[in-house]
Length: 265
Image 1: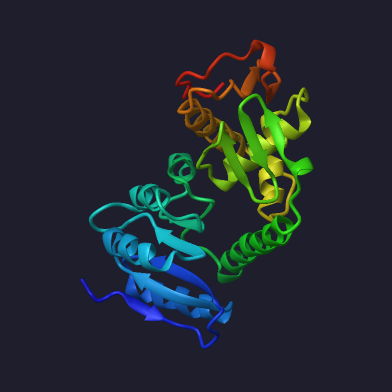
Image 2: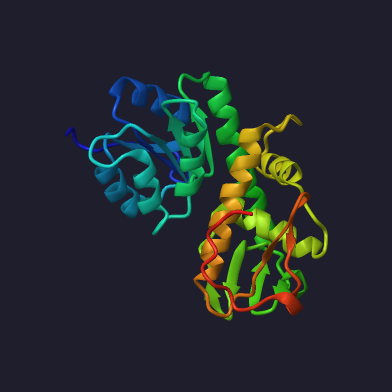
């Protein structure tokens, strides 16, 4: 295994990026592109080395291939999510629906299938980082009036924090955006297609065409959100399935302390 490489930017305030990919030639191209976008870039060729490096630098962005020696990219993302909150973009080796679902389930913010165009990759990265800057500005003006409450559940939109009776919930960005949508609209029912479109727009992506894959990704996010909230005994049942229509926030009067409900509706 070659030593972990660092490719620092001349700007001491540059955002940091970590590339975890087994192909040195592919990694070199990513490093060059990311440096052109203003990142200070580090890289590793396997999941274990990448995780060790991520613990030290806590990167703003991680780009990770799925085909890694030792532990694969999906497992690396799962372990990464236990201590890091940077954006994660998975480079999938195939375009199967199962790969996309596994990427989101592991905690990735987005994925792109190889081979991909450099402009498409750059657009996705720019969209994620624009969103990060917008949230940072919004967090400076948070007030108590901005906090959404549903029983013991509290959601702070500006700081993107969720807690149950003071115990913080560790949600991915997509999970947070879905919960925020439900809590903000209360009784409104959202179709899977409308939620998929919301997530696309939240990530700075364009286009109105929603595929079966997009709708299935929503199901996976909601399944994971239900499972995470159910780990907190005081959390009310938050997401109610409205058969034939979609999902909405469950009324508190009908909500019981959450049990482990990992099945998507």
